[in-house]
Image (cartoon, rainbow, N blue to C red; front, side):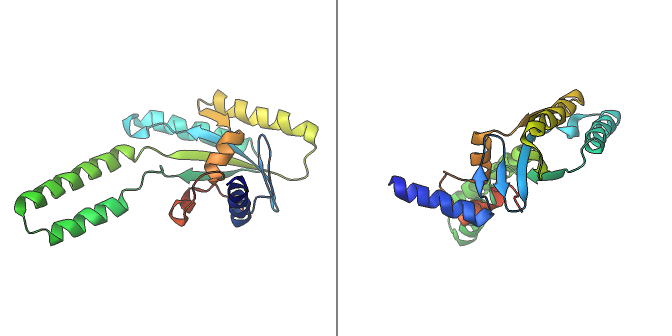
Length: 184
């Protein structure tokens, strides 16, 4: 069982190009990637001036970092298959009472999907290339401090976050592959 699980990890790593996972990064043939997880602000409830201030804060962070990439992931909840199933069942169902119950289920799924729409995960990716190990941690700490100074709730992804983000060590299916963190 353990060998089978290890084989699964290796094939997943190969699939997304990871050669090594460190305590703070993913190492790929294209560089070492460090992820910062940014917890989003619900801007739909902010005033126009507050939204402008959040945009300015993000621009300030971006200007201070030379090599930066950004990634936005939707929540892991995917309602499309369930909604399609309910739609098909409503079309096939002859009993009006059952059809009404299916319609209510569909409406409830729509509500849940709207509530989950704000369940996004934002990542700032720093690609390290040929940096001296003694310079890496101070550089990453400055980036994290800059994010926090500008009012963002942020943390550097640790080993557990990297495992979760890449799907390594988890039950993996192609449908879930959209949740892999970018590594190329």
